[in-house]
Length: 129
Image 1 (spheres, one colour):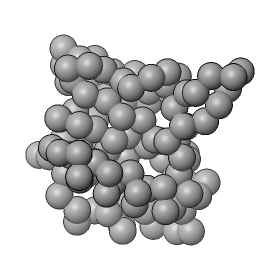
Image 2: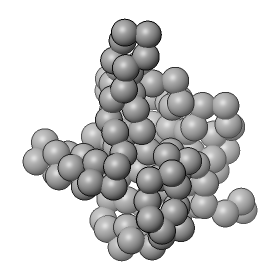
Image 3: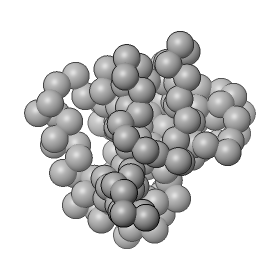
Image 4: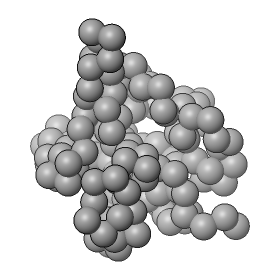
């Protein structure tokens, strides 16, 4: 499963959300399912932004839940629970858990197959079809 990318994309694996959100991944899904610009597949939550103000607000919102944007590994700063990606530039920094195909404009959890795509037309693909 994969998620469609748009302008600026914030991606978070549901395994990280499950670890920090009081209601787990299911509670998180219910909390954000009515937000515009939000969709997800079975493994990734995706929200988006067309400008830097919305981007900052989304990052602050996710960090309030205890998700982190960066962590340090072997003395280097790498993606933590939150990754940023654009079709034009790809993934910001080093992020081992996220794969993207810029030509198709999709992202998916590394180690899984892209398969079906969650998008604005079909925003919630958290169950296998």
